[in-house]
Image 1 (tube, one colour):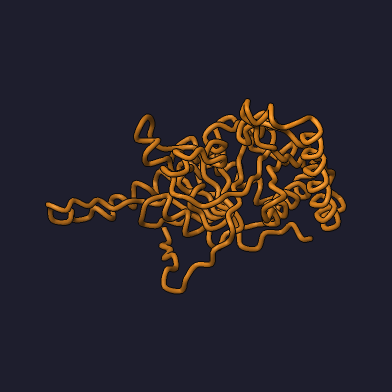
Image 2: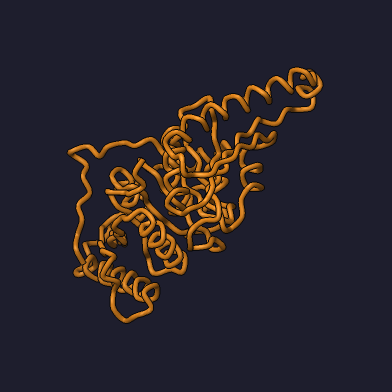
Length: 304
């Protein structure tokens, strides 16, 4: 199966150090997949319901955002000019909304950690958390400690009872492009004390063997597609987010599937992808089912 990404990589930039690291990582993954890179800088226009529109406010916001984005691109390139292999687009709207729209068509959307703190972060969520929760395609969130080069491993959280096809395709494609192995991890949910007592050792062993059989079937199917990628399987018991966090290092890439939900609901319910985005030491790729962009809701792109 071809590892080339024909729809490109979109990365959010806003002038911060977080977006600079996200751009560095995006350039690396795009090079591995022979993909074009588009740096998107969203700007929100000033608006006050009780006051008349501010003359030139939109232009000022756009110019400030453009200058901040150009500084990031210049810093990453190490020169005073913008990289010729990166297209910069300025688009009005909230950053999360703009990136979610791009996630409908891009092979991958990349964003760094950013946002507010405290209770407001819990209620509203950061740009990375909101994009990771509401995207319509794969989203990579790059934390400050992550390595920006090729990953040492691609670690995949797999639920064999679901439909992990898109998750495994992306994971194996990245592993092939990076020349590294795939580590599949399936987590058996931890039991309460009462459940543990009720579960005999015999039943627990059968349950674990069934999980290994299911993972083995999955591995065999994807091994036929990616015969040149080394792979391994691990079955662990515990809380999914904790087990997956324990399985990765800053040099890895972690790939998981997701069930779409509003960010506050995800936080309140203990969403595994949201917990991984907030605390993983390595880039986390959340693979959402692809949702095409309706004809009436296409992104309007404005050239800088």
